[in-house]
Image (cartoon, rainbow over all chains, first blue to last red; front, side, top):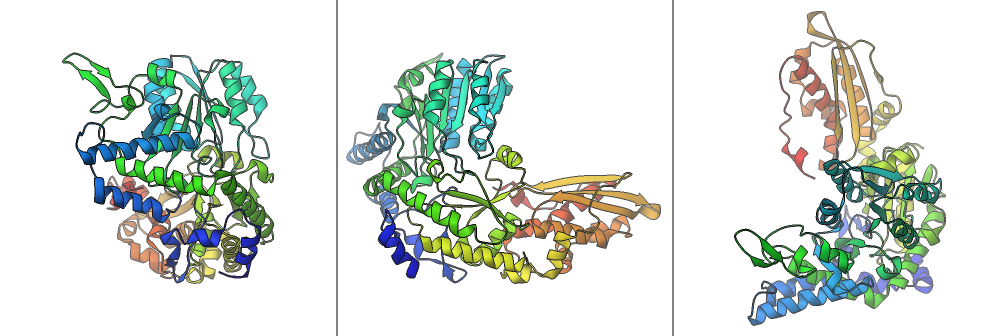
Length: 419
Length: 140
């Protein structure tokens, strides 16, 4: 680590150098260079404790949960349910209200089927925002199409915040559903989802908040937000892929029909009908993803030990440093609000006329991983009037060094493209 | 892979000053395709002249330097050639045309998008179906 990391040790909320040792992958080289991993909004790296939790489960107590009376089954059930408790507590919810799913996409689709099929009727209005990830748009498009409902979008202000005037105008049309992201995966905009949910509920709408980019990066309390459904993914918060959560209000979860039918989700099955298991098991059909749920629990423990206030503070500092440093690179154009207090640790940008994919190729050669493309947010790309952007996104193990490396990489790209 | 090797003068020149860019008023072939992974987009229009020759050809679209330069260079190569020539064009021809840059697997698709559109359009015109035999299209 160079000079700037010692600067970082003095000023940061997090002892990055010590913490980086927890992540085995950060030791590897890419094209002979130190890995500079800045694609955390896509997925994060895993600390050894998470990897160990998976290995420990498979090596020591692999067994099916809930129905096995033997020792392994009891241990697996205890660990799986302990993870549910941890994940729920992490976002200020109750374990009974947390359904394990594959990730945010499955969570929104669960709401689309289990809630939407029952409650949305022909002619109803559904509202989403232009800054949603496709996972919080396409399920509602499909629902609108199957039910003959209408889907409308809240637009954005110039600084990348939601147009609340337009939102309130849409609320006058009494929407059945309001779907909004807590934090944009492209602009980093942190939405005041508490205010959005309060207004939406006052107008009778059910609310779905996409927490995929907020839960991994800042303290979240869903009771304060007051949403009906809140979704997040494990792999973006140092946990394994294939596990995530939908936290829903208990009354709603009770009233809703099941999502998938099968084992585990039933109480009794007869030839002509079946009755459902209790919430949340009603929504967890089949053998669940035991190992990854346990891994998610380990990730929650790891983040809790660091403290989410510190994670957030660390990312704000990186964001400030990046904004200041990268804006000196010729041709650098950043999207989103300059106000770091209202922004997650995401820098979306373009460099002159260098296409983001060309830029990503050049940076990869320097061992730097960024994301390039439309980021599963094509509505937002059209609003920005760009085909694609490059995106650098942070997590706990990123340092000022990483941003210095990115800056050098951008300068190299500018030189190759003769900007 | 060396990026200085990929982004040599030739590719940058075609990226910034694409030849045969735009649309034709009158055309017989109109094909378009995208690379869903990165959003590269190429459309091609061809006017077929006497002797089943490519009388006029234009491409349009947006995307990275490799996809745009490759499509543009391909239109220059194709102009004046008989339609049957398109059947003979291979991936290797495209790589050669680009100066044989060392593209990684994720960027090869960018280089070949123009050829895919050209072949799709011409095969369709000739009443055939073009299958690029690349099942990885379906993979994420």
